[in-house]
Image 1: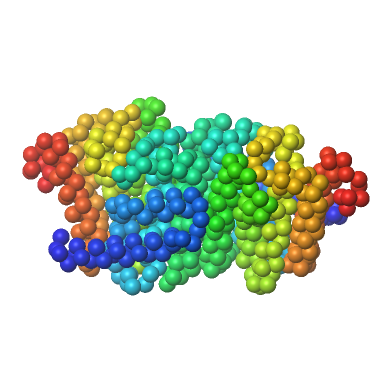
Image 2: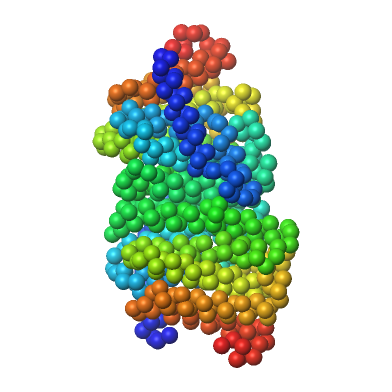
Length: 306
Length: 306
């Protein structure tokens, strides 16, 4: 990754954070629900989904001076944050820490957590429906994609299967489907929104769908492999009772699978997005770092993580 | 209300129920979340919001053979059902009964209740974004209206204030604002969606906004006045710890206010929707029945409920 590419990423990230702040303005609203919405969203996470959306849209020819795509990125992050708030609830994963801070229900109570998540989810659709410099057709398509990725065939079903995996043993295929629903769904919506904004061809959309599938699986495997770590900002060993691929296949086999998903993801995005290849570089650099960290913690030789 | 008007309402209701069933098809999906979504939605409630949307759109000239408006009505009902599922949760109203049956979290657990509500909410936006015979402009406007009515300035904020009203004493103005957010917001979205489908003028939209405000307040007052009744399908005395207008002003004064809201609502809808006046007739007949029942239970003389 060159210095100028890093600078590009920083500029996009900073434009994104500014726009997110504008879409959840300070001081105009009252009450705990709004405070919870703002705090949960504005605490900087990895911002991987919005960055990926912005980079991919740019690679596919969308002019990022047009703010519409920034609004799509903000909507994706709002949905992501809403899903994290709910996943952390006592009746779900019962987590105390998220992004290094107390989870929303710990800080504000369960009722505020549910209401803040619902408000963020609704706000995401509102933001898309009002996004500047996007045609009404693009807005309707983007909302169809995003809502489908959340619902009973997406995130929601993934979370339900994930919880059930803590109550019964799942086999490899069942775990892969859970991971796809839980993680690939929103990555897919992220990339489809970039494709819609950039008016990409159906072939490119399809390629991005394959990329999102690999990306989601890889992401989930990294999450499973680092579950015991305290550096994630989350409760360590959160998944200890769940059916994960690490529990079923062992860490070394999962690491090999992870590398395979990373390689396959790279091939798909290389075909889908070209000019500056910024999305590809970004994902490559991120995975390289993760693979290195994990290989160290698993005590694999350096060559095994190439 | 003439027999033919009743028949019209029945026909619309039956078209609505058929379409709702199509949008949540049996057998194609697996799992508890989907079962909970279907059951909660397909148990017939009053269907007041979808009927009002369909009748108002017809009065304003929308051809109901076009199925787009049916989809808008289904989306409104999905959002309404999602809000009921969440309102009933232990951390909210902790209700056991809804529409005469066990609440979703009692039947399926809290995690399924939250996930089913989120999936219904998302599905509502999906349904609008894919509605036939509606322009992309109309879809984007409808989604902006509906999402705004749910979020931190609508239903969500109303529910938060309602819960807080159980923890502290509110004055009359505060209770009125809570009622407006909790009940008028979604009625307003209902009527604005009808106006968007029928391409009504901004003046008509504004008048419908005033109508929705009165309707929501009247609806909430009826809910408060009938809280002790077992015939509502809900837990009786659910609101006993809440700040309601009945608790602050007494039932008789609230009954007078209710009649005033009903009268004002009637004036607004008479101006906004004309040709068959079917929405006006429907609302009038519904309120007449409620006023009669309440006046009997409060032992008011018949003249006082005219």
